[in-house]
Amino acid sequence: MLTDRQGERLPEWLHAVRQDYLPSLHTLAAGIYRGLDAVIAESSLPWSSGAVEGHVNRIKMLKRQMFSRAGFEFLRKHVLLYAWIPGQESSNRVGR
Image (cartoon, rainbow, N blue to C red; front, side):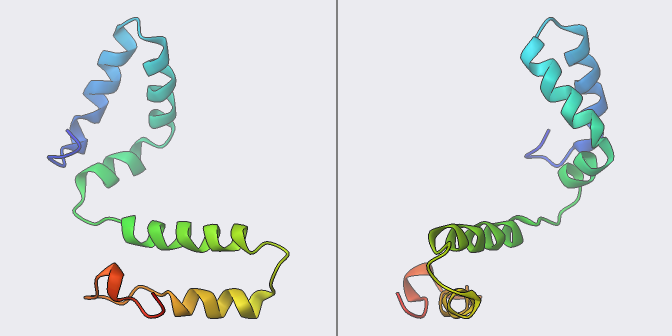
């Protein structure tokens, strides 16, 4: 369903989960149901925010690593130094 981008089938799956005795899946289904429109859109549309989420995750990791060791300017320079450049492999990044 997810690999074929068939998010419109999600309500059927949620209904089937509710009918079965699978307590751990009931919790997952309840969480999915709270944001059903967003989950269906994410699993149906061809766009992805994966690249953006990856950059945010990397910046948060850098912030945790440098917490209370450096100021904002150092963090800014570090983020810009290791910025992802489209078309370059990770081994060709500036500063690596």
